[in-house]
Amino acid sequence: MDEFCEREMVGPFKGVSSAVDSQSGSDRLEDEEAEHRQEIEAEAERQRVLLAEQEAAILEDRKKNKSKYTPIRNTDIPSNPVILPCQYAIRKMKSEDYCELFYFTNAGLEETSRATFTADEDALVMLPTSDGLHKWIPAGAARDPKVHMLKDENLTWEQFNEAAPCMISVMRENDWLDDRIDMHVAFWLALQNHRWWHDFNAHKQRALLLYQAQQQRRWHLSIGSSNSWSLAKINQDLLNKA
Image (cartoon, rainbow, N blue to C red; front, side):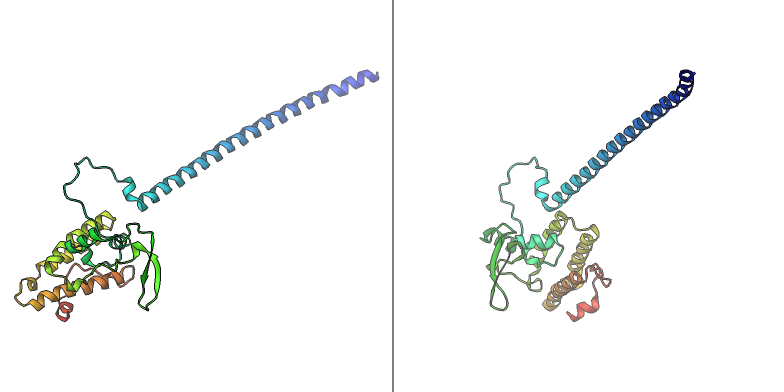
């Protein structure tokens, strides 16, 4: 009787236990599969972030080292050497800061070709300061003290006509915004086509160059502020005062 009761009682519980074990195994399998999916998704996200970081690093490197990624042109070696502006002028163009036109004239380019100033723009050079002391500064941020630089207002019209197209080319090479390049083209063409340029009065011709120098500096100082303006049109009132 006792054995019979025991069998009768144990039988149903064994079935329940088997069902519980089966359910536990199924839950465990689902948990493992969910965990595996999470690992796959996490790895995919990690790879996506890594790829994005690599692409961003390459893009930044392309910006900093344009020459490294510039394709080689399938042209013969030029008979005459290509003379580039000095590192000081190049750095100014890269940062879109004001730079004197002299560095883009034939005389300025010739000075660069003869200069012994270091070609490494990050190298430090010691130069005298306005207070009579000497200071270490990056070569690319310094003017070569041996170069006799002319201010824009002291250029001849011939030198101005040499420099303007050369500077426009360097602007394009350094990815200036199209509207800024177009503004400079319009500005300089307006000066060249102004009636004073053809005037017999030499003072009026000089006034155009002085106006160019003054307004070019003012415009660069205004960049980024709410008071910026376009140089494209000549302000005759300011020109009369130049």
